Image 1 (tube, rainbow, N blue to C red):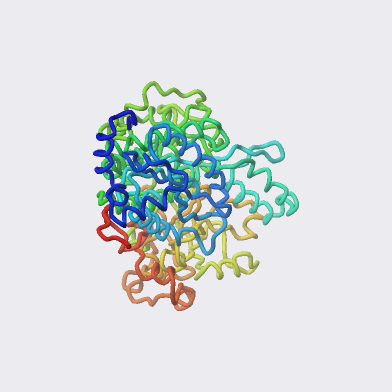
Image 2 (image 1 turned 120 degrees about the vertical axis):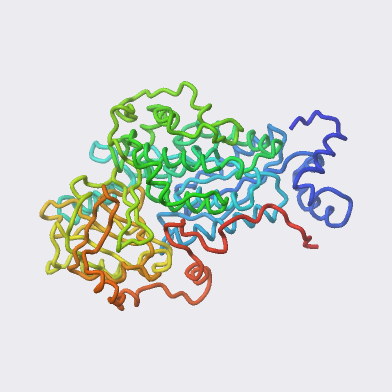
Length: 584
């Protein structure tokens, strides 16, 4: 806002701010709110300036977000430049690589805490600093439920590291190198030596994993400064964008532009188109469904298939391709990709600037056609998420054809069933395990309720004896998730999960499993009468989570299934930003 406006006008604007509910007036409560905030703030901080929180997920235990305090300083500089008051607000941070049993267990808790802190504090708008996998989804879920003016500032991917002269993709090459160790073609010492080469700089994973996917999709949803998503974390242009995002946040408050106005159904369908063109993570399915659920936007699992299935894969990035995130940025970035599929985007969907996303594409150009393919020469002509149904997945399951082996997308083979992750680890490499390359590995008990939290274990390691034979992919079926950096013919998010009474609990070793991606089917070839009469596996039930207290208990009691975004039932929807009662 213009701080050269007459003081009377500024006072009138101040009374219209949400923060005025705390600071305006001469009573005892107003005095308390102002006085305790005067530690360095000038008197005119309470005279019409918008108060902008910087929801900061910086944490040394979230290594991908460890640089966010530096980013926050640039955001704060931008807020101050535009005449606002910048307020650092540390919020729950979830380190994907660190927390156990799985970061997904706390996504909903982080979203709830963020929502409550935004609502409870005297702020008019918020900048959301996120990077690591669950942080941007949690921030968007919380911001959507409170619906204050908000903008995302993504932290950016790390730079490419090299090992033995070749680029390393974080996550993806962990899976590859670890399998080489198990196959006996790479020593444990060499494997360890690759660690520092893989994680070369600050920033999140440099593959098209969940962190990169959600950073890019936040922009497609309209929730970032256009052009910022995908900027590498060490690039000085990230701090420049952070400053501009701070300026924009003040403008959002003045315009009273809120997430519910930006993230419409058209925005989510645009995100599905982008997800396919980018070859993005399957985790985007549960995150976009959860965000839409907070806004009341009608979005279903089937929309990912009907909207995205025929979108071509244009970006040649690991795990579906060859290159990495700083290559994508060099080649023209997100806007160059979106320009290739501009005709598939909803032109009415706006961004935080108030202008449609498609208007910001301008004359975006591709600078490297190896990294970003032309629409007429895609890596894959049909790359979107496929949603499967059948007697194994009455409420659906998903598979990412771009990361799968084409010859396995139609397959029939006998099940080798594991009742838990522990069972998998105990028996997978047993030389006597009755398994061949045609077998279908089935892992259950890994859904939202059963684990709890839906871990990234669906891309099961292959049996050692098959690795020694040169096998590098098999059909795998699970009610859990897999890392966006992973690859393989993996059917995941099977719903309902085994622990929620899903039919995966009734599969037995030796049952013939039929995967038919073209016809969107996942079935056990078992007579219907026998299938209906079978009892769920008692061994699987013994391993299901049964927490007695705390967040885990609340989560298991209230979490929904993957096909609706795995949000807690009491958190879906929004409560707005109003707080009616005082604390003093």
